[in-house]
Length: 79
Length: 245
Image (cartoon, rainbow over the protein chains, first blue to last red):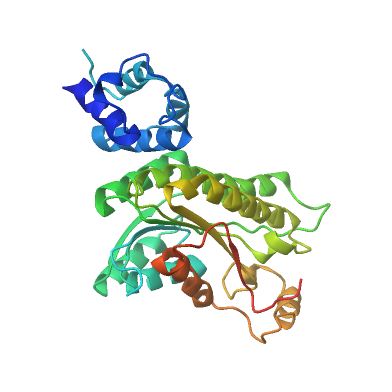
């Protein structure tokens, strides 16, 4: 369920297909995940999980896998 | 009303230009959140609510990261996000070259520049996706032209102007407009910190024949926040009565 919520963030913010949201998907590896998409993604994650990311976390958000690690720090559990 | 339904955060709103912007924005239909170090900001919000307007307040130092995060969270929780950010907070510590304390220069850059950049980064994440928004930075004629006796302050406000122009370019694809207002000499406590002689000279240098009032600036801020300015971004709007510097 948590993973589905994160996938939803990527789908809504970047306009990508759900099955493309794998741990290896990385910042700037697709045209949708540029700096503009990145900000939309941050906003989507903050809204979905009701958290506030700090600047270091936003910089570290370089892949789907990294997103999960960051969310774990905010006590969001992933399987 | 020009700002009906807009959700607005205004910093440095306990007095002067910030308080005038908060009052005018609330009267134009905005739901305002105000912040300042002084308790007066809480009283301002009380006054606005007593008048049937929508206002939230938080007391704190905008250079304190914890306050910034709490402030933005309050905007999320109570306003449901933001449409407009007014980076009004500012510090002016005047000193001639050769007598500028570096701690004063650092404090001005920390509040006038770094806090503006930091809060902008946080706030724009709460703007509605796809609908854009408006960021209004308070610069100064000191930043656009340079004023003797306040060179460190002038430098900090020039940095605000540079940030405004760059951010406008970066955020335009998201329909977020970024503009600055560069007031001249406005009748506030900050302006009256200077010596009476300096104050008199400055007022005499204003060709329109009077000192600016906080509402002169607030009315321009309403324009930049409103949909009337939907195609205006990256501009530095002088509100100075043709002041000579």
